[in-house]
Amino acid sequence: MKVKQVYVGGWLNKTSLHLSEIYDFFLDRYDNPGLKDSKMDKLRANLDLNEVKFCFDGLECLEVTTKGGVDFEVFEDGLVVLGRKRKDGSEKTLKADIDSLTNYYENHLSPALSELFSLGAPNPRELTDIKTSYPFFVVLDDAKMTDMKKLLTAFHQTEYFEVNTKTFDILRGDKLYIINSKGESMKHIQRFVEEQIFLREFKSRLHHYLNVHRSLWGKIDRARSRGELTGDEVEKFHSEIEADDHTITLVDARIKQMGTYLRTREMRAKNDATLKDFEEILLYRYESMEDTLEYMQGIWTMTRQHLAQAKERFGSIQNEMTNRSIEGLSVIMAIGVIATTVQLVNEIPDLEGITPRTVIIFAILASLVIGIIKLMSIASRRRKYTVAAERSKKLG
Image: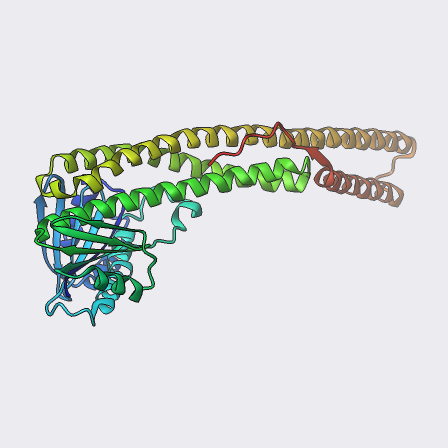
């Protein structure tokens, strides 16, 4: 069994504009006043670049080689594919090669691109806290299925499915794909790997958004299911859903963009002769992703409406709390004016300036006012407010 190539990759959700910026950054031509030159220089040096080429292969892309033996491509839609060519074909260093690719991606390339695109609207924690599980692709040459399964077991992977054709075999684990070439061109296999990485990452992104939906929906339902909340809890929850509204706006925008990426990839794959041998196991997945994306768009519309209703309800409770506070303060002010007027009337006949008695009376009134304000504030925060509403059907 000979190991010919190892791949790993991810998807950054970018455009041709971003690709031009990456290209200029790699060539030390990118100038952005908002980024520190010293930090960008350090990140660029950390990439250990050897050669950078701008090319077109159905999509604009960059072909990059490094001095450390890692080669990678960055496409205009944000797809990144890293590979390492095997010299001896031995499986002994396979894990080391995979670790090397992962290390380069996570500790060299990703930090540089993250800093490059760090300006602009910040992402909420729900969108940045994504635990990525990169798919790995190992390409073998004329291997037996028994050897492929042994390799899958060696990487502690559970077998998902097996595909056998005249020119290649595929054995898929959780995040490891083993492709055995039986005469299939390496160029064709690499194109298949590109599309597989894109589709897996596309699906993973939608799954993450589904989990965000579940988290937001569940948070609102848990609050409503209690029936009543104190004023303190209402204020805290209203602040949280204000932040959640930002998350929903960003996710909604990204979901709308994803259809464009998917259609472009699907059209390219259908017209690519190098993928002809892979059509049966590849093209149906685009239709499946289109259906999943449409489902997510519907889910997210309802999530946005659900949050808007919660914002309206909790906002009205906060307005009620504010109105009660204003009413209370008005009463206190009236009491203070009346008391002060009475005191002045009593003092006018023998008015000789401010007397100790006047100071004591005002001190008592001031203390009374402060005490009443505090008591009203505590009462408002501890008062129970009805938040229950008609329960919505659970989605997703």
